[in-house]
Image (cartoon, rainbow, N blue to C red; front, top):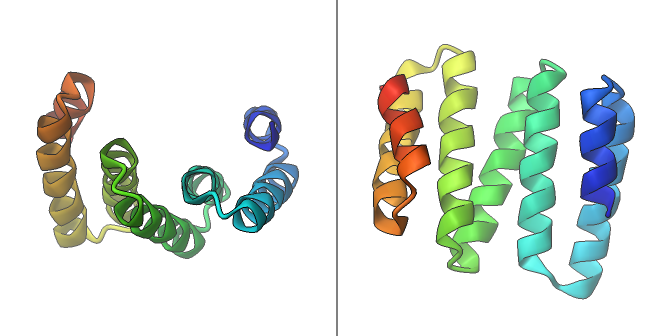
Length: 125
């Protein structure tokens, strides 16, 4: 529910409210020990921080997303996190890191059969 609110706030440019919703979702996820919900919220926070032009915060949240996705063996979430890390590093002009994460993204997308992600990555590389 909070993720939906955060998406709406983000589209409207109300980034602080989006951050608040996602932080609240992370708190609930931690209380429930729901690592996948926490990963989803971390991904959302990373995206909002990118929109807010706060790339270091975005990188941190995308790394949290990746760690949680790996801990829960969620390949789709790992794929998402790797793509987000690649895009954030690209925005920071950390091109070696961007390529590193996008190559991992491509590999993961191939493993899970995500043709759309594979196409997007190939266009970036």
